[in-house]
Image (tube, rainbow, N blue to C red; front, top):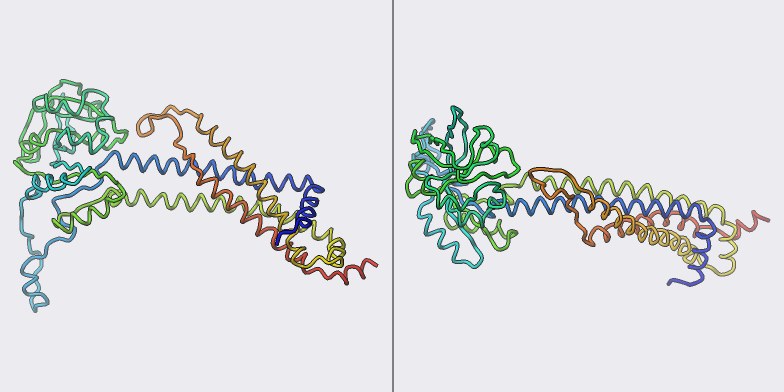
Length: 416
């Protein structure tokens, strides 16, 4: 039980040693403040990147392939036979998702779901004696603007212009610069089958990714089917969900129902998202090291007080103070240092976050906002408080325990 006299003695010790107390408090405050600022930057960038990933791509993509390749009937019938055949050519099949229109209609029957068929393929874009290989996406413009942020990335024209421009194509800024293509120019697009279409530039986008800006182009789905020689075929169904976090469950359900490989945005970006775990581990390791250094200041000041006040401790114990009271006095000193440092650290962290938020950068591409993405939530302040109080209590516990082991008889006799 907390005793008022114990608290008075603890505060008197801290006030008497003002310089050491100030140094210890500043160590805790700076540790908490820098943790809040660093965490705000890292958590903010993580949330911003995740939001950009979620907004810039479909939540679920159904592809015209299978996660586990089909087994040849020969190996099924004669499994484990005495004769082994090698080099068996897989059975050829027509690529594409069967009855993709019916599947799209079924998906969109669920409230908030948006689905669109897509046909992808490679092609060569020729203009002015120059050639560039690009990935062609045959899309429905009305659905594509709901599935991705392509419309926000347009700097000239629009994706919807594909519906009004005959044989239109939308390209990236990288391809536009390399081939010197402008809005309204006619470029020759050659498919792997040798089919050639003269397509008019209907729009130019900038995604901030050089691979997309130089190597991706959008056309109408029907134009892609003609260009690739695949009438009435789509090799992907892209789906946007009302809840992006439900994508893994929905993808498994689609793959179980139709057997086609279904990938959630989390699966597609699995390696990228795993970097956040590493970043957070580094962050908390650094903060832990800072708080350990700060806790040494608390440990030193309380240890010094214990060494200097051994006779006073003996007198208190001879007056009726118990070992638990002595331990409580020095623990209260550590808690007081942690609390004061925590509050000051909150103030330091808040000022640092606001200072970082006022910075502006001249950036192009992915971060056009020119501001640092910061997370101003209370979560960082709570974690900082836990670090401050836990390190302060641990640092104060050892000298407090030693103080409680003092034997008043031996100390008083030795002094006499």
